[in-house]
Length: 130
Image (cartoon, rainbow, N blue to C red; front, side, top):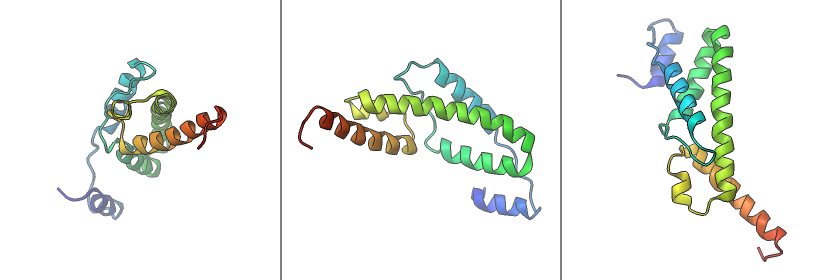
């Protein structure tokens, strides 16, 4: 087993052929699971999910344009659903540990930024000192 970036470089030079890791199946699984969850419920995803998604889309764009366009729609659907839930949790949740328990590192960073801005805005609107 070698690091992914080395394997990708070797593939670009035509020295190796990468085996697909079934990421399409993983995306469909998490997308369907996410659709079944409630508005304030996030299904667990692997911490490196967005990294894998980004890499997969970059590689797919280079190799299979028609497959890329279709897969991109599913990826956008997943991102929109997750984004909506993270934003909803950030403006309504008071228990940070519970709210972020199923978030990826990228989502946690977004959650914290939005929560801070929303809390500041709420205080300002209520005439509280900030």
